[in-house]
Every structure is written in structure tokens, then in C-alpha cells.
Length: 126
Image (tube, rainbow, N blue to C red; front, side):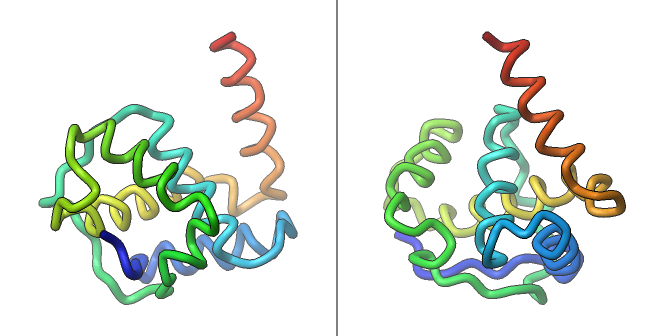
């Protein structure tokens, strides 16, 4: 399954900025949001584009809390893979990095623009 994930160096910087601006608690909260945000785009990413692993190390239990199976289940559904797939950790890393990349423009302002945008996108979907 999944033991831990290490973000890219660039992602680590974005996590620190958004964590400080949004004040949502520990850094793993922003990483978790980034992962879910990336998955919400319903986009299959290519493992050939996997970024460096020089960033923040997150044990799976810290990253996903008590809902690890739920988060990984969403990922498995998107890629039509099983929880035992050996590529699973790389997909998790890639989606955290991707989510942070598309959230990064919001790290330069107060960060709440991102939350408002997510709410607006959710309301349009309804």
C-alpha cells in the first residue's frame, strides 16, 4: 500500500506559504487539500512527469489521517488500479505536487481566493 510520500522541493515551499497564510493547522492539511483538489480535476497524470522528491516527507497516516482508504480509493478509481499497485505512491506524490502547482497562484496573495474559487466551482456543479 502506501507508507510515505515526499513532495517536490517546489511543492514544499508552496505548502509552507499556504499553511502560514490560511492558518488551517499543520502542513499536512494543505497537502491533503492539494491532493483532493488535483483529483477533483479528474485528470490522469503521466508518471513520466514525476517531479523531484526533495521536499517534505509525509508518513501516510499523517498525510491522510483516518481516511487513508477513502483518499486512496478515489485515486484508484481514477486510474482503475488496485490498492496493491506498486505505482500507487508515485500517483499520490504526483497528485499532491499537481494540486499544489495549480494552487500556487493563490500562495502569493491571501490564499482565501483559492477557497472562494473552490466554493464557486462546487456551486456551479450543483
